[in-house]
Length: 110
Image 1 (cartoon, rainbow, N blue to C red):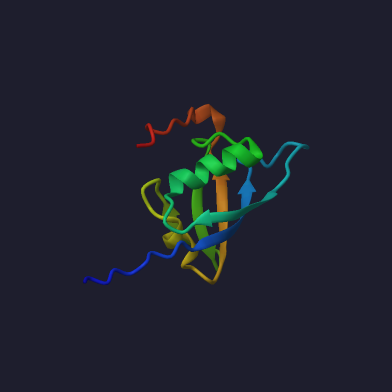
Image 2: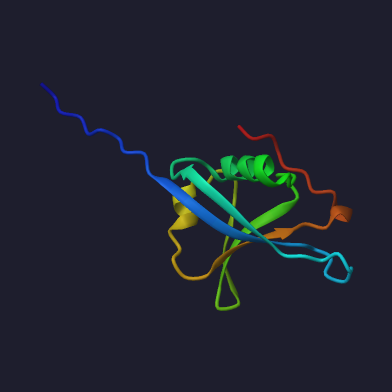
């Protein structure tokens, strides 16, 4: 008889701030986003889908970064896992909006 480990699904809670690209308008607001209960084995692409479902932000309209002490630590791509995003315990996750004039488009998520 072979004993196999039972995989344990760990869920993460992610807080992030959405930073708008145009800070000169009177309608500028920073948004704090809360994503509750996302699997640590999910990809960053799944995080983008969840943000779209909850907040209506176009998945290709922002970069996902980790900032600590006013320094950019990481820029995340769609193939990385949520576990990689949540390993950092110092700093904050910032979603920087890409200016619409640049016409951001993401490749298809596979």
